[in-house]
Image 1 (cartoon, rainbow over the protein chains, first blue to last red):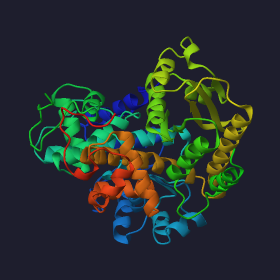
Image 2: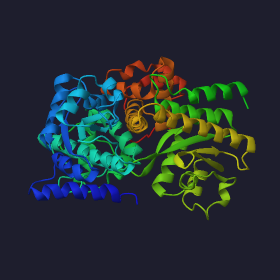
Image 3: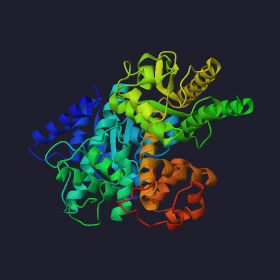
Image 4: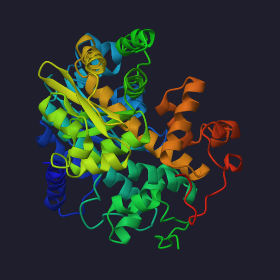
Length: 249
Length: 264
Protein backbone atom coordinates (compact mmCIF):
# COMPACT_ATOMS: atom_id res chain seq x y z
CA UNK A 1 0.00 0.00 0.00
CA UNK A 2 1.03 3.55 -0.64
CA UNK A 3 2.76 5.13 2.31
CA UNK A 4 3.57 1.99 4.26
CA UNK A 5 7.00 1.54 2.71
CA UNK A 6 8.44 4.94 3.71
CA UNK A 7 6.93 4.43 7.18
CA UNK A 8 8.58 1.03 7.53
CA UNK A 9 11.92 2.48 6.46
CA UNK A 10 11.55 5.42 8.81
CA UNK A 11 10.99 2.88 11.57
CA UNK A 12 14.27 1.12 10.71
CA UNK A 13 16.15 4.43 10.77
CA UNK A 14 14.56 5.56 14.03
CA UNK A 15 15.41 2.18 15.63
CA UNK A 16 19.10 2.92 14.98
CA UNK A 17 18.82 6.18 16.89
CA UNK A 18 17.06 4.46 19.77
CA UNK A 19 19.79 1.82 19.77
CA UNK A 20 22.47 4.44 20.33
CA UNK A 21 20.22 6.54 22.54
CA UNK A 22 20.34 9.66 20.42
CA UNK A 23 18.23 11.86 18.19
CA UNK A 24 17.56 10.54 14.70
CA UNK A 25 20.08 11.86 12.20
CA UNK A 26 21.04 11.22 8.61
CA UNK A 27 23.91 9.07 9.86
CA UNK A 28 21.38 6.52 11.18
CA UNK A 29 20.27 5.92 7.59
CA UNK A 30 23.66 4.33 6.81
CA UNK A 31 23.48 1.68 9.49
CA UNK A 32 19.79 0.96 8.85
CA UNK A 33 20.21 0.63 5.10
CA UNK A 34 22.98 -1.99 5.17
CA UNK A 35 20.92 -4.98 6.36
CA UNK A 36 17.65 -3.74 4.86
CA UNK A 37 19.00 -3.32 1.33
CA UNK A 38 21.30 -6.31 1.59
CA UNK A 39 24.68 -4.64 1.12
CA UNK A 40 28.01 -4.96 2.92
CA UNK A 41 28.51 -1.36 3.96
CA UNK A 42 27.49 2.25 3.43
CA UNK A 43 28.75 5.82 3.58
CA UNK A 44 27.01 9.15 3.70
CA UNK A 45 28.47 12.43 2.54
CA UNK A 46 26.91 15.83 3.09
CA UNK A 47 27.31 18.42 0.38
CA UNK A 48 25.77 21.62 -0.78
CA UNK A 49 26.10 23.32 -4.12
CA UNK A 50 29.32 22.56 -5.93
CA UNK A 51 31.06 21.48 -2.74
CA UNK A 52 32.19 17.86 -3.08
CA UNK A 53 31.15 17.34 0.51
CA UNK A 54 32.49 15.80 3.65
CA UNK A 55 32.06 12.22 4.76
CA UNK A 56 29.57 12.19 7.66
CA UNK A 57 29.31 8.54 8.42
CA UNK A 58 30.77 5.23 7.29
CA UNK A 59 29.78 1.76 8.47
CA UNK A 60 33.19 0.15 7.95
CA UNK A 61 36.73 0.73 6.75
CA UNK A 62 36.00 -0.26 3.14
CA UNK A 63 33.14 2.25 2.93
CA UNK A 64 35.44 4.91 4.34
CA UNK A 65 38.05 4.13 1.71
CA UNK A 66 35.46 4.25 -1.07
CA UNK A 67 34.22 7.65 0.04
CA UNK A 68 37.70 9.09 0.43
CA UNK A 69 39.07 7.58 -2.76
CA UNK A 70 36.55 9.53 -4.76
CA UNK A 71 37.38 12.81 -3.06
CA UNK A 72 41.06 12.17 -3.76
CA UNK A 73 40.64 10.97 -7.33
CA UNK A 74 37.91 13.38 -8.34
CA UNK A 75 36.26 10.44 -10.08
CA UNK A 76 33.65 7.87 -9.22
CA UNK A 77 29.97 7.16 -8.68
CA UNK A 78 29.45 9.80 -5.96
CA UNK A 79 30.51 12.58 -8.29
CA UNK A 80 28.52 11.12 -11.13
CA UNK A 81 25.38 10.86 -9.01
CA UNK A 82 25.81 14.42 -7.75
CA UNK A 83 26.18 15.70 -11.29
CA UNK A 84 23.32 13.79 -12.90
CA UNK A 85 20.77 13.90 -10.11
CA UNK A 86 20.16 10.16 -10.57
CA UNK A 87 21.83 7.15 -8.96
CA UNK A 88 25.13 5.74 -10.22
CA UNK A 89 24.89 1.96 -10.18
CA UNK A 90 27.67 -0.50 -10.88
CA UNK A 91 26.81 -4.07 -9.98
CA UNK A 92 30.21 -5.36 -11.11
CA UNK A 93 33.18 -3.07 -10.58
CA UNK A 94 35.44 -5.59 -12.31
CA UNK A 95 33.51 -5.39 -15.58
CA UNK A 96 34.93 -3.55 -18.56
CA UNK A 97 31.92 -1.24 -18.41
CA UNK A 98 32.79 -0.12 -14.90
CA UNK A 99 36.47 0.24 -15.70
CA UNK A 100 35.64 2.24 -18.82
CA UNK A 101 33.42 4.47 -16.74
CA UNK A 102 35.85 5.02 -13.85
CA UNK A 103 39.32 3.96 -15.04
CA UNK A 104 41.04 4.84 -11.77
CA UNK A 105 38.28 4.46 -9.20
CA UNK A 106 36.95 1.05 -10.29
CA UNK A 107 40.23 -0.90 -9.92
CA UNK A 108 41.06 0.98 -6.72
CA UNK A 109 37.64 0.17 -5.26
CA UNK A 110 38.11 -3.51 -6.12
CA UNK A 111 41.48 -3.51 -4.38
CA UNK A 112 39.83 -1.92 -1.35
CA UNK A 113 37.39 -4.85 -1.18
CA UNK A 114 34.29 -3.66 -3.03
CA UNK A 115 32.79 -5.55 -5.96
CA UNK A 116 29.64 -3.48 -6.53
CA UNK A 117 28.66 0.11 -5.67
CA UNK A 118 25.31 1.85 -5.70
CA UNK A 119 25.35 5.57 -5.04
CA UNK A 120 22.18 7.59 -4.52
CA UNK A 121 22.17 11.38 -4.74
CA UNK A 122 20.40 13.11 -1.85
CA UNK A 123 18.36 15.46 -3.97
CA UNK A 124 15.06 17.25 -4.12
CA UNK A 125 15.10 18.62 -7.64
CA UNK A 126 17.81 21.29 -7.67
CA UNK A 127 18.41 20.97 -3.92
CA UNK A 128 21.55 18.98 -3.20
CA UNK A 129 22.25 17.56 0.24
CA UNK A 130 24.89 14.88 -0.43
CA UNK A 131 25.08 11.23 -1.41
CA UNK A 132 24.29 7.85 0.14
CA UNK A 133 26.74 5.20 -1.04
CA UNK A 134 26.24 1.44 -0.69
CA UNK A 135 28.74 -1.26 -1.56
CA UNK A 136 28.86 -5.03 -1.78
CA UNK A 137 31.87 -7.28 -1.35
CA UNK A 138 30.43 -9.57 -4.04
CA UNK A 139 29.17 -8.45 -7.45
CA UNK A 140 25.47 -8.47 -8.25
CA UNK A 141 22.66 -6.02 -8.92
CA UNK A 142 20.11 -4.80 -6.40
CA UNK A 143 16.71 -6.44 -6.83
CA UNK A 144 13.84 -4.13 -7.77
CA UNK A 145 12.67 -4.23 -4.17
CA UNK A 146 16.12 -3.43 -2.80
CA UNK A 147 16.52 -0.62 -5.31
CA UNK A 148 13.17 0.90 -4.31
CA UNK A 149 14.05 0.64 -0.61
CA UNK A 150 17.44 2.24 -1.22
CA UNK A 151 15.69 5.17 -2.92
CA UNK A 152 13.46 5.63 0.12
CA UNK A 153 16.44 5.44 2.49
CA UNK A 154 18.04 8.17 0.37
CA UNK A 155 14.86 10.30 0.54
CA UNK A 156 14.87 9.91 4.32
CA UNK A 157 18.54 10.89 4.57
CA UNK A 158 17.89 13.94 2.39
CA UNK A 159 15.20 15.31 4.69
CA UNK A 160 17.22 14.57 7.84
CA UNK A 161 20.26 16.32 6.39
CA UNK A 162 18.30 19.38 5.32
CA UNK A 163 16.73 19.56 8.78
CA UNK A 164 20.09 19.32 10.49
CA UNK A 165 21.50 22.09 8.31
CA UNK A 166 18.54 24.14 9.42
CA UNK A 167 19.45 23.37 13.04
CA UNK A 168 22.95 24.58 12.42
CA UNK A 169 21.55 27.84 11.12
CA UNK A 170 19.83 28.24 14.47
CA UNK A 171 16.29 28.56 13.22
CA UNK A 172 13.37 26.32 13.98
CA UNK A 173 13.27 22.92 12.40
CA UNK A 174 10.73 20.78 10.66
CA UNK A 175 9.97 17.36 12.00
CA UNK A 176 12.46 17.54 14.86
CA UNK A 177 10.21 15.53 17.13
CA UNK A 178 9.51 12.65 14.80
CA UNK A 179 9.25 11.51 11.26
CA UNK A 180 10.18 14.25 8.82
CA UNK A 181 7.12 15.46 6.98
CA UNK A 182 7.40 12.92 4.20
CA UNK A 183 8.26 13.62 0.64
CA UNK A 184 4.94 12.72 -0.90
CA UNK A 185 5.62 11.31 -4.33
CA UNK A 186 2.78 13.24 -5.91
CA UNK A 187 3.91 16.57 -4.80
CA UNK A 188 4.07 18.97 -7.74
CA UNK A 189 2.63 21.69 -5.52
CA UNK A 190 5.37 21.31 -2.92
CA UNK A 191 8.01 21.77 -5.61
CA UNK A 192 6.16 24.68 -7.21
CA UNK A 193 5.70 26.36 -3.82
CA UNK A 194 9.41 25.90 -3.10
CA UNK A 195 10.24 27.66 -6.37
CA UNK A 196 7.81 30.48 -5.54
CA UNK A 197 9.39 30.93 -2.10
CA UNK A 198 12.84 31.51 -3.61
CA UNK A 199 11.35 34.71 -5.03
CA UNK A 200 9.24 35.67 -2.01
CA UNK A 201 12.09 35.12 0.44
CA UNK A 202 14.99 35.96 -1.85
CA UNK A 203 16.74 32.73 -0.79
CA UNK A 204 18.30 29.67 -2.36
CA UNK A 205 16.08 26.78 -3.31
CA UNK A 206 17.40 24.72 -0.36
CA UNK A 207 16.58 27.46 2.15
CA UNK A 208 13.16 27.96 0.59
CA UNK A 209 12.41 24.25 1.05
CA UNK A 210 13.55 24.30 4.68
CA UNK A 211 11.38 27.37 5.35
CA UNK A 212 8.38 25.74 3.73
CA UNK A 213 8.73 22.64 5.88
CA UNK A 214 9.46 24.64 9.02
CA UNK A 215 6.30 26.66 8.48
CA UNK A 216 4.18 23.52 8.11
CA UNK A 217 5.75 22.00 11.22
CA UNK A 218 5.47 25.15 13.36
CA UNK A 219 1.82 25.59 12.45
CA UNK A 220 0.98 21.90 12.68
CA UNK A 221 -0.17 21.83 9.07
CA UNK A 222 0.35 19.26 6.35
CA UNK A 223 3.12 20.22 3.97
CA UNK A 224 0.82 19.59 1.01
CA UNK A 225 -1.79 21.98 2.39
CA UNK A 226 0.72 24.78 2.99
CA UNK A 227 2.13 24.28 -0.51
CA UNK A 228 -1.34 24.36 -2.03
CA UNK A 229 -2.09 27.67 -0.26
CA UNK A 230 1.14 29.18 -1.58
CA UNK A 231 0.50 28.01 -5.14
CA UNK A 232 -3.08 29.34 -4.94
CA UNK A 233 -1.64 32.65 -3.67
CA UNK A 234 -3.59 32.43 -0.45
CA UNK A 235 -0.36 32.47 1.55
CA UNK A 236 2.82 34.49 1.13
CA UNK A 237 5.98 34.44 3.19
CA UNK A 238 8.24 37.37 3.98
CA UNK A 239 12.03 37.35 4.12
CA UNK A 240 12.11 37.11 7.91
CA UNK A 241 14.18 34.61 9.88
CA UNK A 242 11.32 33.59 12.18
CA UNK A 243 8.53 31.25 11.10
CA UNK A 244 6.00 33.32 9.27
CA UNK A 245 2.44 33.71 10.20
CA UNK A 246 1.80 36.42 7.67
CA UNK A 247 -0.68 35.44 5.04
CA UNK A 248 -2.77 37.17 2.47
CA UNK A 249 -5.69 39.07 3.98
CA UNK B 1 -3.26 12.06 -40.10
CA UNK B 2 -0.04 13.78 -41.08
CA UNK B 3 2.00 10.91 -42.57
CA UNK B 4 5.23 12.86 -42.68
CA UNK B 5 4.97 13.91 -39.04
CA UNK B 6 4.13 10.31 -38.14
CA UNK B 7 7.30 9.01 -39.80
CA UNK B 8 9.35 11.74 -38.15
CA UNK B 9 7.85 10.85 -34.79
CA UNK B 10 8.78 7.17 -35.10
CA UNK B 11 12.33 8.24 -35.87
CA UNK B 12 12.35 10.57 -32.85
CA UNK B 13 11.02 7.81 -30.61
CA UNK B 14 13.72 5.34 -31.61
CA UNK B 15 16.54 7.83 -31.36
CA UNK B 16 17.55 7.03 -27.79
CA UNK B 17 21.16 6.11 -28.40
CA UNK B 18 22.31 9.69 -28.85
CA UNK B 19 24.83 10.89 -26.31
CA UNK B 20 22.60 13.59 -24.81
CA UNK B 21 19.47 11.43 -24.61
CA UNK B 22 17.07 12.86 -22.04
CA UNK B 23 14.12 10.80 -20.80
CA UNK B 24 11.96 13.81 -19.95
CA UNK B 25 12.38 15.47 -23.34
CA UNK B 26 11.83 12.07 -24.99
CA UNK B 27 8.55 11.50 -23.18
CA UNK B 28 7.38 15.01 -23.94
CA UNK B 29 7.85 14.14 -27.61
CA UNK B 30 5.48 11.23 -27.05
CA UNK B 31 2.74 13.34 -25.41
CA UNK B 32 3.10 16.33 -27.74
CA UNK B 33 3.13 14.24 -30.93
CA UNK B 34 0.13 12.24 -29.71
CA UNK B 35 -1.85 15.48 -29.60
CA UNK B 36 -0.57 16.62 -33.00
CA UNK B 37 -1.16 13.30 -34.74
CA UNK B 38 -4.30 11.93 -33.13
CA UNK B 39 -7.74 13.39 -32.70
CA UNK B 40 -7.16 14.20 -29.02
CA UNK B 41 -6.99 17.42 -26.99
CA UNK B 42 -4.31 16.48 -24.47
CA UNK B 43 -2.04 13.64 -23.40
CA UNK B 44 -0.40 12.67 -20.12
CA UNK B 45 2.05 9.98 -19.18
CA UNK B 46 2.67 8.00 -15.98
CA UNK B 47 5.71 5.85 -15.28
CA UNK B 48 6.27 3.34 -12.48
CA UNK B 49 8.72 4.44 -9.78
CA UNK B 50 10.60 1.62 -7.99
CA UNK B 51 9.58 3.31 -4.72
CA UNK B 52 6.28 1.55 -5.42
CA UNK B 53 4.21 4.32 -6.97
CA UNK B 54 3.39 5.80 -10.33
CA UNK B 55 4.68 9.27 -11.17
CA UNK B 56 3.54 11.87 -13.69
CA UNK B 57 6.49 12.38 -16.03
CA UNK B 58 5.12 14.24 -19.04
CA UNK B 59 1.97 15.99 -20.19
CA UNK B 60 1.04 18.05 -23.22
CA UNK B 61 -0.79 20.64 -21.10
CA UNK B 62 -1.12 21.67 -17.49
CA UNK B 63 -4.75 20.46 -17.43
CA UNK B 64 -3.56 16.99 -18.44
CA UNK B 65 -0.76 17.07 -15.86
CA UNK B 66 -3.21 17.99 -13.09
CA UNK B 67 -5.58 15.25 -14.14
CA UNK B 68 -2.82 12.63 -14.09
CA UNK B 69 -1.84 13.86 -10.65
CA UNK B 70 -5.46 13.69 -9.55
CA UNK B 71 -5.63 10.03 -10.56
CA UNK B 72 -2.60 9.28 -8.41
CA UNK B 73 -3.86 11.26 -5.44
CA UNK B 74 -7.33 9.74 -5.60
CA UNK B 75 -5.96 6.29 -6.51
CA UNK B 76 -8.50 6.01 -9.28
CA UNK B 77 -8.86 6.50 -13.03
CA UNK B 78 -8.24 5.03 -16.47
CA UNK B 79 -4.44 5.43 -16.40
CA UNK B 80 -4.24 3.46 -13.14
CA UNK B 81 -6.62 0.77 -14.40
CA UNK B 82 -4.60 0.52 -17.58
CA UNK B 83 -1.30 0.26 -15.70
CA UNK B 84 -2.62 -2.36 -13.29
CA UNK B 85 -4.17 -4.53 -16.01
CA UNK B 86 -1.60 -3.86 -18.72
CA UNK B 87 -4.51 -3.43 -21.14
CA UNK B 88 -6.06 -0.41 -22.88
CA UNK B 89 -8.90 1.31 -21.03
CA UNK B 90 -11.42 3.49 -22.80
CA UNK B 91 -14.33 5.74 -21.88
CA UNK B 92 -16.19 7.40 -24.75
CA UNK B 93 -18.38 9.50 -22.48
CA UNK B 94 -17.07 10.49 -19.07
CA UNK B 95 -20.55 11.82 -18.29
CA UNK B 96 -21.63 8.19 -17.92
CA UNK B 97 -18.59 6.95 -16.01
CA UNK B 98 -19.34 8.16 -12.47
CA UNK B 99 -20.07 4.58 -11.33
CA UNK B 100 -16.66 3.38 -12.56
CA UNK B 101 -14.63 6.40 -11.38
CA UNK B 102 -16.72 8.43 -8.90
CA UNK B 103 -13.91 10.92 -8.22
CA UNK B 104 -12.00 10.93 -11.51
CA UNK B 105 -14.94 11.25 -13.94
CA UNK B 106 -16.31 14.54 -12.50
CA UNK B 107 -12.79 15.96 -12.14
CA UNK B 108 -12.00 15.19 -15.78
CA UNK B 109 -15.21 16.78 -16.98
CA UNK B 110 -14.54 19.85 -14.85
CA UNK B 111 -11.14 20.10 -16.54
CA UNK B 112 -12.90 20.16 -19.92
CA UNK B 113 -12.50 16.55 -21.03
CA UNK B 114 -15.38 14.31 -22.15
CA UNK B 115 -13.60 11.14 -23.31
CA UNK B 116 -10.43 9.31 -22.37
CA UNK B 117 -8.30 6.50 -23.75
CA UNK B 118 -5.47 4.96 -21.73
CA UNK B 119 -2.80 2.87 -23.45
CA UNK B 120 -0.26 0.68 -21.65
CA UNK B 121 3.48 1.15 -22.05
CA UNK B 122 4.24 -2.52 -22.07
CA UNK B 123 6.74 -5.01 -23.40
CA UNK B 124 5.64 -8.62 -22.93
CA UNK B 125 4.83 -8.96 -19.21
CA UNK B 126 6.60 -5.78 -18.15
CA UNK B 127 4.36 -2.71 -17.81
CA UNK B 128 6.43 0.43 -17.22
CA UNK B 129 3.68 3.04 -17.40
CA UNK B 130 0.64 4.28 -19.27
CA UNK B 131 -0.22 6.98 -21.80
CA UNK B 132 -3.52 8.81 -21.32
CA UNK B 133 -5.26 10.52 -24.24
CA UNK B 134 -7.97 13.07 -23.41
CA UNK B 135 -10.56 14.52 -25.75
CA UNK B 136 -12.82 17.52 -25.21
CA UNK B 137 -15.74 16.03 -27.17
CA UNK B 138 -17.44 12.75 -26.22
CA UNK B 139 -17.49 9.82 -28.65
CA UNK B 140 -15.71 6.60 -29.47
CA UNK B 141 -12.02 6.94 -30.28
CA UNK B 142 -11.20 6.28 -33.91
CA UNK B 143 -9.80 2.74 -34.20
CA UNK B 144 -6.95 3.85 -36.45
CA UNK B 145 -6.03 6.60 -33.97
CA UNK B 146 -5.95 4.09 -31.12
CA UNK B 147 -3.71 1.77 -33.15
CA UNK B 148 -1.30 4.60 -33.92
CA UNK B 149 -1.36 5.78 -30.29
CA UNK B 150 -0.54 2.28 -29.10
CA UNK B 151 2.21 1.98 -31.71
CA UNK B 152 3.78 5.24 -30.47
CA UNK B 153 3.58 3.99 -26.86
CA UNK B 154 5.08 0.62 -27.90
CA UNK B 155 7.97 2.19 -29.77
CA UNK B 156 8.73 4.50 -26.85
CA UNK B 157 8.62 1.56 -24.41
CA UNK B 158 10.89 -0.60 -26.54
CA UNK B 159 13.30 2.29 -26.98
CA UNK B 160 13.53 2.81 -23.23
CA UNK B 161 13.92 -0.89 -22.42
CA UNK B 162 16.20 -1.49 -25.38
CA UNK B 163 18.45 1.13 -23.88
CA UNK B 164 18.78 -1.09 -20.85
CA UNK B 165 19.61 -4.31 -22.66
CA UNK B 166 22.03 -2.64 -25.05
CA UNK B 167 23.90 -0.72 -22.44
CA UNK B 168 24.53 -1.47 -18.80
CA UNK B 169 21.81 -3.35 -16.91
CA UNK B 170 21.57 -0.46 -14.48
CA UNK B 171 21.20 2.27 -17.12
CA UNK B 172 17.40 2.40 -17.22
CA UNK B 173 17.10 2.72 -13.44
CA UNK B 174 19.65 5.50 -13.47
CA UNK B 175 17.95 7.34 -16.28
CA UNK B 176 14.44 7.04 -14.92
CA UNK B 177 15.50 8.34 -11.50
CA UNK B 178 17.40 11.18 -13.14
CA UNK B 179 14.25 11.93 -15.11
CA UNK B 180 12.09 11.94 -11.99
CA UNK B 181 14.47 14.37 -10.32
CA UNK B 182 14.45 16.51 -13.47
CA UNK B 183 10.67 16.63 -13.18
CA UNK B 184 11.04 18.07 -9.68
CA UNK B 185 13.52 20.69 -10.94
CA UNK B 186 11.06 21.68 -13.66
CA UNK B 187 8.26 22.12 -11.10
CA UNK B 188 10.57 24.19 -8.89
CA UNK B 189 11.47 26.42 -11.85
CA UNK B 190 7.81 26.78 -12.83
CA UNK B 191 7.12 28.06 -9.31
CA UNK B 192 9.95 30.58 -9.54
CA UNK B 193 8.82 31.86 -12.94
CA UNK B 194 5.17 31.93 -11.86
CA UNK B 195 6.04 34.03 -8.83
CA UNK B 196 8.38 36.41 -10.65
CA UNK B 197 6.13 37.12 -13.60
CA UNK B 198 2.71 36.58 -12.05
CA UNK B 199 1.81 33.51 -14.13
CA UNK B 200 -0.21 30.41 -13.53
CA UNK B 201 1.68 27.10 -13.65
CA UNK B 202 0.55 26.30 -17.20
CA UNK B 203 1.86 29.64 -18.48
CA UNK B 204 5.08 29.17 -16.55
CA UNK B 205 5.62 25.77 -18.16
CA UNK B 206 4.93 27.09 -21.67
CA UNK B 207 7.38 29.91 -21.10
CA UNK B 208 10.04 27.47 -19.93
CA UNK B 209 9.42 25.06 -22.79
CA UNK B 210 9.37 27.70 -25.52
CA UNK B 211 12.55 29.26 -24.19
CA UNK B 212 14.25 25.83 -24.06
CA UNK B 213 13.18 25.10 -27.63
CA UNK B 214 14.28 28.48 -28.94
CA UNK B 215 17.69 28.08 -27.32
CA UNK B 216 17.92 24.34 -28.10
CA UNK B 217 18.37 23.45 -24.44
CA UNK B 218 17.06 20.56 -22.41
CA UNK B 219 14.05 21.55 -20.36
CA UNK B 220 15.68 20.36 -17.14
CA UNK B 221 19.00 22.10 -17.84
CA UNK B 222 17.27 25.42 -18.42
CA UNK B 223 15.13 24.91 -15.31
CA UNK B 224 18.23 24.24 -13.22
CA UNK B 225 19.97 27.32 -14.64
CA UNK B 226 17.05 29.51 -13.66
CA UNK B 227 17.04 28.11 -10.13
CA UNK B 228 20.77 28.37 -9.45
CA UNK B 229 20.87 31.81 -11.05
CA UNK B 230 23.35 30.92 -13.79
CA UNK B 231 20.64 31.94 -16.27
CA UNK B 232 19.10 35.24 -15.15
CA UNK B 233 15.32 35.40 -15.34
CA UNK B 234 15.82 38.71 -17.11
CA UNK B 235 16.82 36.68 -20.19
CA UNK B 236 13.11 36.00 -20.57
CA UNK B 237 12.36 39.10 -22.49
CA UNK B 238 9.12 40.97 -22.65
CA UNK B 239 8.55 39.61 -26.14
CA UNK B 240 8.81 36.00 -24.93
CA UNK B 241 6.29 36.82 -22.23
CA UNK B 242 4.01 38.49 -24.76
CA UNK B 243 4.13 35.36 -26.90
CA UNK B 244 2.46 33.59 -24.03
CA UNK B 245 -0.20 36.31 -24.18
CA UNK B 246 0.51 37.08 -20.61
CA UNK B 247 -1.18 40.23 -19.44
CA UNK B 248 1.22 42.73 -17.96
CA UNK B 249 4.18 41.12 -19.69
CA UNK B 250 5.98 44.44 -19.65
CA UNK B 251 6.24 44.59 -15.88
CA UNK B 252 8.61 41.67 -15.48
CA UNK B 253 9.79 41.38 -11.93
CA UNK B 254 6.84 43.08 -10.33
CA UNK B 255 5.20 40.99 -7.65
CA UNK B 256 1.53 40.27 -8.15
CA UNK B 257 -0.71 41.46 -5.38
CA UNK B 258 -2.02 38.60 -3.31
CA UNK B 259 -5.48 40.15 -3.68
CA UNK B 260 -5.39 39.76 -7.42
CA UNK B 261 -4.36 36.23 -8.30
CA UNK B 262 -3.20 36.44 -11.89
CA UNK B 263 -4.13 34.12 -14.67
CA UNK B 264 -7.36 32.26 -15.28
